[in-house]
Image 1 (cartoon, helix red, strand yellow):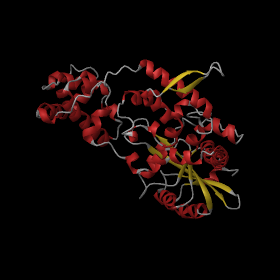
Image 2 (tube, rainbow, N blue to C red):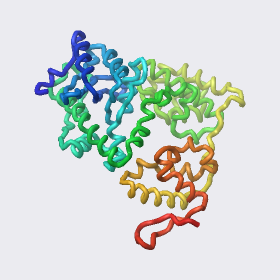
Image 3 (tube, helix red, strand yellow):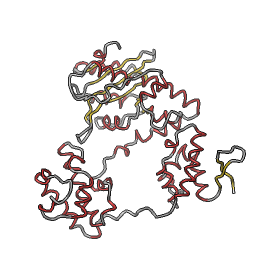
Image 4 (cartoon, one colour):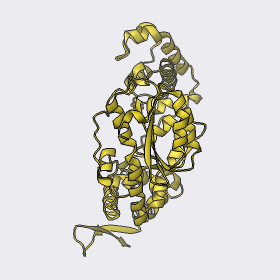
Length: 398
């Protein structure tokens, strides 16, 4: 498409015809541009969809959600049986699914697929396209304010140049996955993107669990924190702000610890600004009082600091095995498991009874490394230097 303005859909009368053209596609690429600095939810500023027809023709449209209703486009994406390709599409899908009658599926994520093809754990889009398609993508418009109108031709060119190569990247990755026998792995890797539970909004009474620094408060403080965090979330949504712009987590923790009961005491809390006290001082004090009035039986349990099981040396052993096995597979170790995954596995005495609680014991991870990790932890095998290949480690049966 030589003129990017030809791909812009910013008039209502053009939405239907563009969708009709997209229906000829046997595969679709999807990308969004959004703005999310202060608002409670990201602001969708552009929706790009590319298509490849059975005859091999490729084209793309950029729908302007600030000028037209893009819900018919999203509904089309839901209804279409062909694969929708994203790159690192978690937030894109969350935004679009919020406009949809049901979840968009089936989907393919090029970043996740690339991690299974030895291209890195979280390869960037430009590097991926360079590696797979041989096309250089400039990121000059990456930090543009996509909510400003009119959109510049350079922005549209950038937006369409982003979504068209997805089609070729998908083709290359599908071939590599097939050659390596990892097609089913890729299906497994994106299963959460079409799972409604993945998009469940955190209930108000669980918001406090996301607050950092809860070890500094006792059970009563946690009760107060639960009330304050729920109030902050509702206030942030009402004012269309990110919760941290109402006030930050350390302020919540300090309020929960101090439990002030008078408006004059609120000024002693560092980070709680005078304007916020004037605006919401009474509401904050009411939330604190609700926490103070909770019966002992209704207070949140204090989260235990693990089971204090010492796993430092064991963790090093598991990491060594993970590193070697990942190298053999040609996959970045962080794609297979994180340090947190290994630590949780090492500390969990009932790990195999509750394998569903451990990602590393499920699916392809369980088959390729999880079972051996459990054998190491049970003491059924030992990990030692391979005498035939110095510098490499090997499992030996006891």
